[in-house]
Length: 158
Image 1 (cartoon, rainbow, N blue to C red):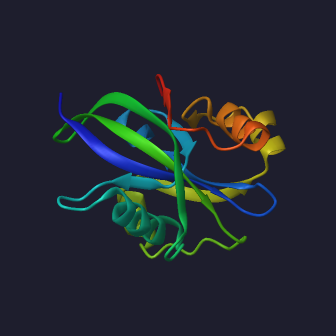
Image 2: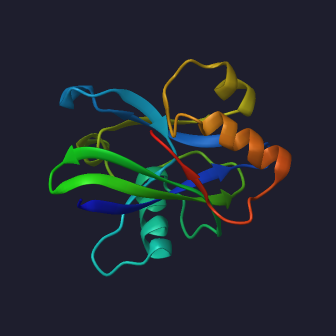
Image 3: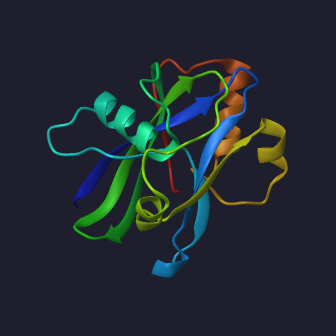
């Protein structure tokens, strides 16, 4: 299988709100969902450089302090040259900020990004929106209750 390597960030502000990006894949016959910002590694790019680039492009967060890897997951799907993607999600603590992506609205739309917003843990728990990973609320709750895991947790499914 040809699996794309990708990195994401669980961005938390001082009030433990999480910044999520809305992906609308309905034009491709798939679902819409909210996920942590991030994306694929470019050839020759390491995970930290890729995550810094992706966070600037998607949400306008420049030079974040990238923390430990929290989880990884494999999604199998057909997209271009890829059969799926391996996502590794890192913790990023930051002061609250208003997202201002470096990419234009059209460039974001080409990547199926249609919005972004801060969610409180309570809002996320009460919502029926689809998230990726689907256990995002549980992962956030565990992080806030138990602290950072000793190594990335391997998640299954979306």
